[in-house]
Length: 440
Ligand SMILES: CC(C)(COP(=O)([O-])OP(=O)([O-])OC[C@H]1O[C@@H](n2cnc3c(N)ncnc32)[C@H](O)[C@@H]1OP(=O)([O-])[O-])[C@@H](O)C(=O)NCCC(=O)NCCSC(=O)C[C@@](C)(O)CC(=O)[O-]
Image 1 (cartoon, rainbow, N blue to C red):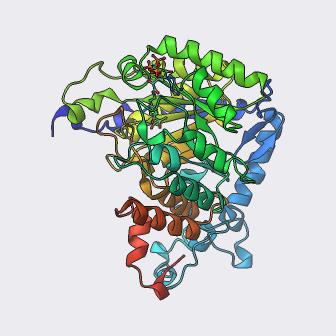
Image 2: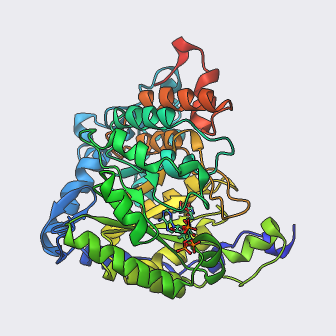
């Protein structure tokens, strides 16, 4: 393994003091936002509140609700104990069957049901995790944009319809970009017109400039996303302009959207260049500093993007690189406006998501069946699979309102239509479990 391939070690992580400070900042960041883009009240850990004090008060109540064993430890006389069962919440709770028995070891030393140290450690490890996580499904856009064969419009529309019925509240529908650059999404207008009246679902679309924005609005889009890069070379290869030029374009888009009172999401494409050499053979720019990422994120936020999705476009980040980058962004953008978007090239998505959740981030992008890849990012593989994210969140007791069973069926459907196995580890694992042994 060359030094370029070595993951960053713990010694490169910020000190706990920094993390504590930022966590305090994140509660402090719980403040009303003055704009008309749907962020009037702060929204932290799945609940809205209007002042940082009320958020702090809510926190105690929230931790007690989310981690019932915290209360249980205070009331052992009732015989209540921490049980793995309490980790599961929401519509898709895992029904623990045979596996549950394996936790009931007679030796108390190894039994989480009666070991207070384990309860305390578990609580400490999980306490920053939000109670509710919003999943932004990007399969129909990011997932399909890199498909070599043109996917029929009717299939794209059917995929969006099915995803909308799974409990997801946001499904990225398509991109109004140049068909010369992304031929797969040349049918953006037809897709949008077919799904525009779906109820109970937000359907943002990507718009790289005013031309794309106007086409999106004409086709019925009611939410748009702009996408900037933290790397000059990547900005050039993806949207054919410098970072500053892209920010000028996006200011025009956000201004136009504001006039129509439409929300704008901002994507910030990252490349952890330290690792690029092992993917494409030549590091062009060296590492992108967290400060550079924070600068572009703040520009997007200040121009009116209600949410900034931080995208590890080629999936090379590890918690060692992702955490410092997130801390830098959290210092300038309120935590409730930050989302994370990981590709799974090196299998780092779930650890990166867990680290993000521990910092308090509560919006995660993912793609059904792990579809995806960016046509202008060589080596980019699929996004983290939505099924895998929901499986992990269910296991953590975090609510998503998404039905994992339905997701698995949709993932199976689209994988079969595209003629390839699912990229979801959960889907693959469960497809091997006999029907009567399924835990879902
Ligand atoms: C930005 C441009 C358009 C600049 O492309 P350009 O060639 O510099 O544009 P131009 O202004 O010189 O115009 C060239 C032609 O494109 C047309 N044009 C111009 N704009 C549009 C438009 N909106 N829709 C349709 N057509 C358009 C324009 O009308 C003209 O047509 P012609 O006169 O030659 O017939 C181009 O580079 C482009 O479309 N890039 C999109 C690349 C892309 O979609 N990448 C993937 C999305 S980013 C991503 O996947 C990462 C993300 C978000 O998922 C996060 C992560 O994974 O980390």
